[in-house]
Image (cartoon, rainbow, N blue to C red):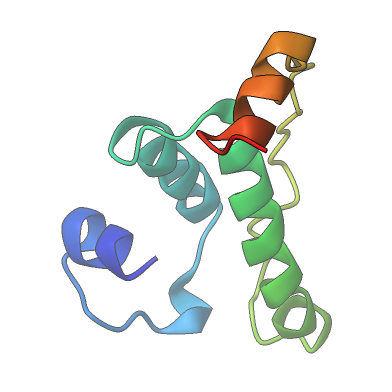
Length: 97
């Protein structure tokens, strides 16, 4: 977040009540492009930030919920499993009994 604020908004500290609806979108774009994060990782970061902002939103410190219109979805990931040979190679790790 600090790098995002420094690079994209040109500030070190950001006043929380200045967060608008563009803030989460800009941060997501920053994560995807500058940090080269995968979609699901960037979505998790945004979800974490949203969780931090929830008390601020509930206490009406922000005039509007900056995350309200933001629609981000996790993309399905096909997980690959190690083959038996790969597992044996890891467990042996050069050690002979």
